[in-house]
Image (cartoon, rainbow, N blue to C red):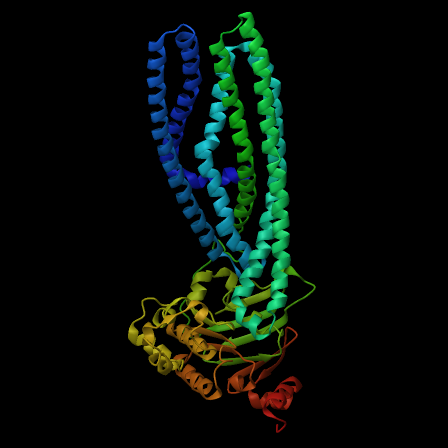
Length: 578
């Protein structure tokens, strides 16, 4: 309940429409409650007394009330839909903005599939709850309370006789709501797993086909799909038992009233019109309970979804600026210094990724980073822009601990080309300009030429205006990498981090790119992670990493003489002629 209450703040901007919807709903409820009284009037004053004028007059009055009821109900529905859709839009936007603020550590724990379900299914569940609350969700309790009051006004004895029935109905409702909400939570968790698996397979469809693993992935999906279906069936079966039980209670109540009320009519205690009105009010009292029974499922689903949405909205980014953080100054000659740095993912101290890193890098240098898979090369790069904070030690940027600097100002001085190339749907020009949207066409072309991308871009159907499809599927791996390099160079960064970003580029093109880097990054700092020794052997310094530690540091020639690990890598890739 608390999570739902917290999310109702998203209704606040639309309070006028919500209030008007509720006012229209109250008018509809009053109209509904007036009908049984008019039925009583028709029977007692019209039919029994044989007064046709009363019947005709009451008929037209009931007709006018019904038409008014219809108009107001349509207005209420329209306003409810507007509020619900607007709320869902704002909620999706709030979730999206929140996700964009997350640090790498947050994204490591909240998987893509889970976030997609929260943005889609969970948001829809809460939206549906709000819409129904402004419509039948509020109408049902108002009708019930109004009918109960009028039942006592019509016949106190019969009303008191029905109270145990109403109490029993409320107990059943509370029981179902309290038990259904946790069940819906398990359904949404199953949907998380199903959606994550689906997202992975769509993204890796080509790999699945290449390795002939369609049957295996189909079996995996079938297992998750079956688990989700079975859980959903159990929840729906449990929820579905509520309506028949409540319906039986309503029918028992009506039978009891007809039995007891009929004796009172025969004995002259009440009139036939009063009995008819009382039965109508009883149905109007119990029918909303039936509606509320159905709404219990909506509420239970919304409660589970609200908790999951709140989990995202209340999650704090792991990396945040300190209250007294200062912006980094423009780095003419940037300096990076690692002081006894250690790092563990998710504070798992049993499996350190980096240990005892002591390193100082001066501006104007090109630093190559080499090592086996899992040696900690990418993690080392990710600490520099503060995607993660060091677990132990300090990382200084121009003599200042990066935790005392504003992260956004750090990122303005750093450009990154990640190991996995990411391009967005849009034109080639828009992708290169992604970091500097205000860059001129001349600057875009200059960056593309430096990245050795200009020639192949001109050969594309519309050149720089060629549309890049989702995930860049209409480009080769090498083309995507060169566009990513151009995107980074266009930012004119003080520090350039290249994470094995030329793996799909031929050696000649890679050599040309590295030659351009010497011009573009003069007096700046370049850190280049490479799997091929040819990518780093011409660097000013080569950092050899092994099991999260610095195994060696020096020039190519010096490492050949002093580092067994480097010699082994060189021999395996370049031959034994060392």
